[in-house]
Amino acid sequence: MDNSTLEDTAAISKIRFITTKPTGEECGELCDSAEADVDIGNTNDFEVTIAVSDYDTERVGYGCRIFARGTEYGGIIRDIESISSTRKVALRGRTWRGMLEYKVVEPPAGQDHLTLSGELNTVIRTLIGDRFGGLFAVPEADTGITVNNWRVDRYVTLYDALQKLVDNYGCRLQICYVQPEGLEYGYVTVRAARIKDYSKDLEYSQEDGIHVTVRDNRNGVNHLVCAGQGENQDRIVLHLYVQKDGTIGKTQYYKGSEEIEAIYDYSSADKEKLEEDGRKKLKELQSYKKCTMTVDDIDLELGDIVSGYDAITDTQVIKPVTQKVVKCQNGKITIDYKVEGDD
Image (tube, rainbow, N blue to C red; front, top):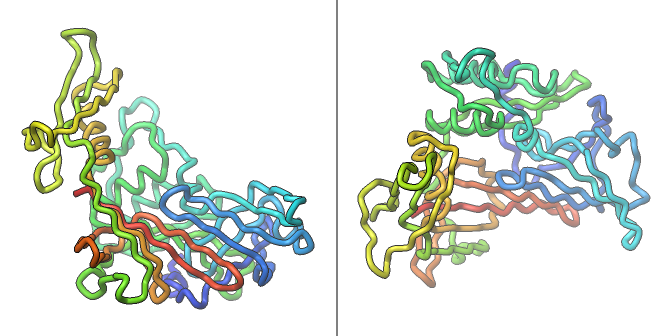
């Protein structure tokens, strides 16, 4: 089911939200007065607000789909709220990406871990399986990347398992709702895609007339004391430190007043698990550079690398896109991007 030509990113100006019946048949575009807010990469959910007069259970009722063709903006309506004070109806649900967060990957019976090998998209297809019936599919596209004996973490969400896998091979998850011509039902494709680096060609700043906010936070934790299994003197204790270049090691770099410490209590973890999760925790707590921007000339994907610059503080951020918020108001589409670093 290779529909790569249908998966090309849609131009922002051409994004239109469409609804379907619960069975998947397309019902047409949302009314012009509808407002949409879709979060990709953080809460992974959506909210669409329509007038009471436009509410139709067949088009926008429980189980109906909302999507923008050729993008991952959309999901299934699972939460409906009638707001009498404004004569509005709020339609909410998880995005396709969000639905991946609510499936759990378990090790096979009698085995410690699920271990996978093969072409990268084939491995993704194995992980997804038939968890969503025919709604999710992985295209028959060869990435040229071979996975060898990849051990999936125990009892993790499907999304975390997929994200860790593609991260390891320098790729990102490409999620897209496609509605092929001639077919009554659309479906969601999930595949590995190469990360695009726009930082060398594009640098977004206020001087370009773009709303850019750059934050350089140097108040983060740089020494994490990790406590694992055991009690009293027998308890496993591991010290992790942020290095000058932002990486994490076991040698202390920041000392004295520059040292900022915190405790990570994980009483059930052995030494290996304590270090693995402790590194993740310190990455969350350490100093960072963050950039948010609103761009109207390109539709970036999560994982794509961009550059943002603030002339006031002379701060540059070159990092992957970690969040997108797509909004539709008065028929106009805007996309806000969040780019967050760790150094």
